[in-house]
Structures are given as C-alpha cells and as structure tokens.
Length: 219
Image (cartoon, rainbow, N blue to C red):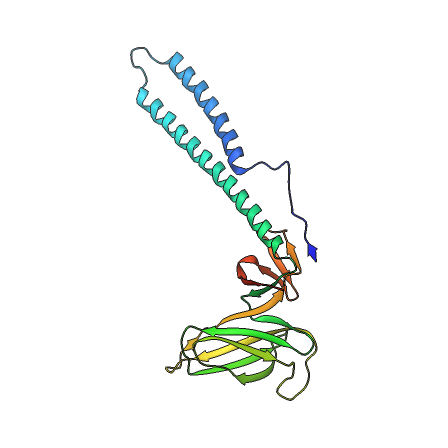
C-alpha cells in the first residue's frame, strides 16, 4: 500500500497574514499623512473631521474582513486534516465507489447500476481502455439496483486480457428519452495521494476523489 507524501511549506505566509501586514503599513502611512495635514491646515478653514472618521471606519472594516479570512483559513486547515485522516482510514479496505470503470481480473469484472424509475429498455456496452466496444447486451429495466457480471468474453467469444474496462449503460423511457443510471464498482483502496489540495484514494483503476466512496465493506 502506497501513501504519497503530504506537501508542506513551513515558510509560506497566508494571504490573510500578508493582507494584515499591508493594512498595517497603509494605516501607519495614513496616520503620518493625517498628522501632517492637521499640522499644516489653515486655522481659518480647518479640514472636515468627517472625512477622517470615514477613513478610520473603512480601515476598521477591512481589518474585520481580514480577521474573518484568517478564521476561515484556520477552518479550512482543520477540514483538510480531517479529510486526510478519513482517507488514511480507508487504506486496504474494500469500498463501493461511484464509477463506471473497474478491472477485469481472473476472468471476472462486476459493475452495479441503478435507476430511480422503471425504464423501457437498457443496453449494456463494455468498452476497453481505448473506448472500443467489446460486448453489448441487454440489462434490467426495473427501478432499483442491479448487478452486471462480465466473464471477460466479447461478442465473438474471445477472452479479453486483464485490465481496466468501462461499462456504458444506455437506458430510455417509454417516450424515448435518455435515463441516466447511477454506476458503482467494488474496489480496494491501495493508497492515498496527498499531492493536491484534497486527498485522493488510489485503486487498481487509478486515483479517485474521496467523495466518490459510497460505502466501506467489512472483510
């Protein structure tokens, strides 16, 4: 089981921290200019204090927004840590994934597909990695979940080599409109990839988003 390293950067500065630094520099500059204006204003025509108050209020609002961003960054970090922990807990476990691709091994491949309604006709097509159709047959048209087992043989009886294959489900209702099927496969989690912003699980057919896991099976 392989686990990709988690990318870290100890010297990176958050956007909120950088914004706070820039705001502090701008605020200091504003105070220097304000002091110079007050010292050099015409006593007979003093500057309007309302403008200063408005600018101070604007600075305060920006500071509050930066603080909000800092808190959101903290929550995002905690969420990523929780997602990483969840992904690691799936290592070596057999899961049900929402996908139309699975592996043919030892002359067996299995897919699940389901409909939320009865359909008029269902055509199942198995394709190879290049998208070439190998087998076409009819499927179950009732609402609910169904399983399709493939023995690796194409329409001519030839045995396909082990590898990754895809099942296409073409379903139509009585009006002739297409009906989308929900696909699922059973695969074992072989590793976890932390190279991106969110962790990915690794199976025999490639990397998958952790959100595609629909169930974790015992044994």
